[in-house]
Image (cartoon, rainbow, N blue to C red):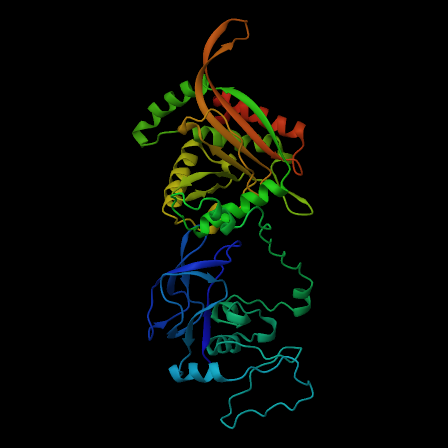
Length: 430
């Protein structure tokens, strides 16, 4: 029977998206893995692949449609031998009630010799594509032991190709998937109430896109539910600036130019290794302590921001971190990052120094345990160890900490290690 192609959830936080562009048209034959459409999520534009073979029988949602809910039918896929008439027949066929009497007589196999659809242990019919059934038969797999990833749990080609005959009992013992986090309750005045306050005043109404809605929801949740506290330090950058200049001269032939931000990323990654208990995230009823230093870096883009994650940052050289950060930032601005490139990590960096901001407090991005707000390096009078007054380049930083994950002394220890790494940059190469 015809299969509905559903709006996919391309990220864990996605609830709806924009069907930006169809890459196929009605009547096109597609195979598993072929690109069907481009979907705009709350963060990026991503390509959507077919999970089964067939023919595009009908496109239900037009290109450019916004606010398409996840699991909404966007097209209909026809199997071999089916036609558009089968779509009408399927839509008019009444659904069988789930609570039908169990002692109801089961129909005999059709006279054509086609075997009836297999059933699970509970007697429920198992839905699988013809290709999936054929591959399962060739591999000797029991379809009742395979979980389908297609629409409504339908078993498709990829499921049987990757299947391992795991008993149902073992699957039942697996930990249940975590419940989705609901958006924080709306607070404050309604949109209409606010608009009435400005009747007679000139203004432009800006429609919220998916990214801005997600940012608003997540930051509201963060400030309402995460117990922030803040630690501040001034860091002298003179040694780092001199060391950076010398390195860049030596790396010029390779086309590498290190930024101060590259050193900050490395310093934070190493500090997380020095204070491993602070390399952690809040997981609802427990704390998860990570072994690698996966550091997220905020990147401003038009209409919002991304926090791409540099994984295993403590293991990478400064030049490798620099190249990776440039690539991630460029693709972030084009909204071409995959979800696994901007999700995860335990720690984040937000640098507004290049905008002339001396210092600020950043909001933690859950489930991270902390975020470092970095200000500009500014010439300031300082008192040296010998008591002499001198001028130095000083950068102010603020560490925002989730008190559920990191206590005050531990946060102070982490920030001190970050400071030591930046004031003694050669140590980071040891």
